[in-house]
Length: 240
Image (cartoon, rainbow, N blue to C red; front, top):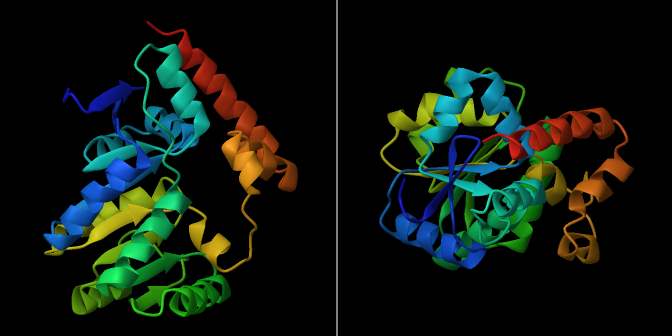
C-alpha cells in the first residue's frame, strides 16, 4: 500500500485534501495523462462487496476519493483517518473552473436528455471559455458505440460520466483504454444539480456533514437504500 493511500473495505483511497487532489488533477491535465477517478461513497463501497467485477474496476482506478461522510467516519473509527471528504460535485466545479481557465474541452454523459441539454447550456454560460465538445443522455449501454466514436473523434480533456454507480465506473473502464488522453470521472447526479433539476443541500448542511440527511428528507425514497448502507457500514466497522 502506498503511503498516500488508506485501504477501506479493500479499496485504496487517496489520503489527500480536496485542494491537494485538485492540484494533482491539474498537473495530469497539463501533461495530458489519461486518468480514471472514482468518487466513492458508502453505497459504492457496498456495491464493490456485492460485485467482484465492479470491485476490480474501482480498485484499479487511478484515484479513489471519499465522497461521503460515512467513508470518513469509517476511516477514523478504523484508526486510519482520511484527511477530508472530497465530494463529486465539488470536484466537478473545480475541474470546470480549471477547464475554463485553460480553455479545455469537456464532454457531458448522463442524466435525461433534457437535463443533459440544460446542464450543458448552464455550464457554457457560467464557464464561457471552456468548450463543451459533446454530450449524450445516460440511457445507453456500457458498450455504446455512438458515444465511444464521438469521444474518439472529439478527444475531450475531461469526460464527466453521470450514469450512477456501478454503471458509470464500468463504462469508463470499458472505454478509457481506447483513448490517448482524457480525465474520466464518475459524477453521479452532478448534471442534475448543474441543470437545476435537483437542488443541492444548503451550505450549512454541507458544513455540518449532513448533506446525506438533507437529500433523504427531500427524497424519502432514499430511506430504504440508506438503511441498507448504514447496516453495511456498521458491519464493516466491526470487522477485524
